[in-house]
Length: 116
Image (cartoon, rainbow, N blue to C red; front, side, top):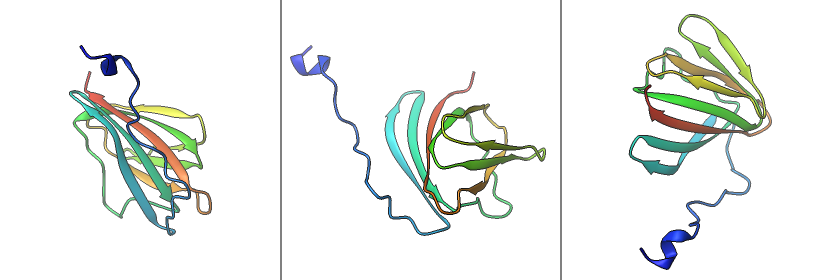
């Protein structure tokens, strides 16, 4: 083991001023390891396209760091999230982004792990 292995490594740096136009969303992969994926999702006045549903094979834990968002599930349930709110979405629970804040950039942190 080298000395470097015991030191933190900068994986990514946050972009300042995300530069999104209304209706845009950007997904940035921050970390990927076996059974683990961490993403930063940045959106502005965004909603998933009509008829589109996420149906993922992994569990997904999401939190909002800034802004706000509404997730919609295929059973009709809608959950509003704001800064500090978190939600665990089990694998294969169909969901979509119904809306994000219209004027403030919404920053999500999403952690995908093997279902279980």
